[in-house]
Image (cartoon, rainbow, N blue to C red; front, side, top):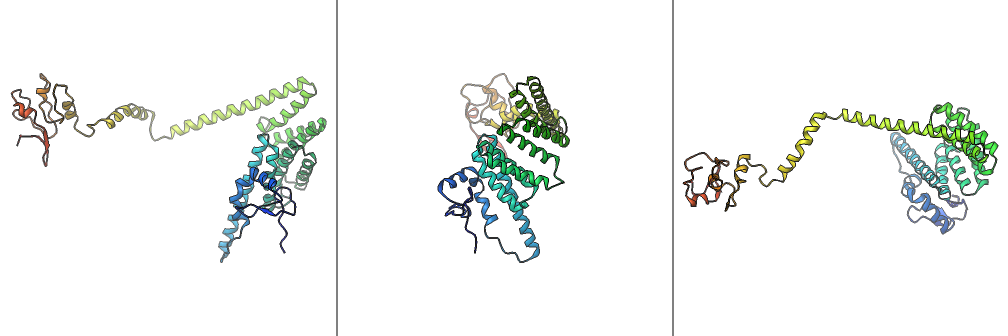
Length: 357
């Protein structure tokens, strides 16, 4: 017989309420359901069905292996979404909202990696930080003890993860008021971060900053100012390096462009002309015909090629339109008025003035 569902938030056995969408998350009351929805469930409700719902039946070993790989990727994405959401709440100063999201990350992470995996240590540390901020020191101590036990049971644990553990223990000691213990853990945090990332890395700055806060509280201003200066120098160097990397990336992208700077300049210079041509009503016609049609004159007819340019603008040479020949009468001021005002018509092969047949 299957075990009764537990509340997603508090773990109570009596959880009669269910999410009406996925039907996979259970809650003991409405308040816990709303809290979990506002924290994480609204982000992962649609992701739970492929992971916790009925799985398809595969008929070959290849299909079963592929289906298992897909399920693992979906579980990893669930853990990543829950963990990043919880971290965002902590950074925003909302530790109570971070706890349900971190609990979901712990739940799926334990199922995916195992209950004693080192990959759960960042989740335990985040839960401890959120619990400390929410005023739950006993719960925070429990999460820190679990993370510390996993690190001690894993000899190959990286220096970066040990640095995170000491950082969390240092923050908890500060919240407890044990400043000497906090300095011990923060000094270990700085040492391990330096061994993993280097002396001038920003990962070292966190330990320096909280140590400076402790010295400032203890009125040891020389030590505090020295550490604050070190933190500022580390971040200044990091930001300056990021800016230079960004500039180099932009330069490399410009050099990889199919257009040279000269070609790009020509293109920029031609753009207004091309834009004007695209807006011209005479677009696509012969340039000479356009010039002839644009000649100023009183009483000029609407058709551009139906009048004599010489009559419209005395003293200028005629500009024939498309299909015209410099035959008799064209440009002749003795051209009859009825011919000068005759509209143009389109023949099969060319334009010709009316009455020229």
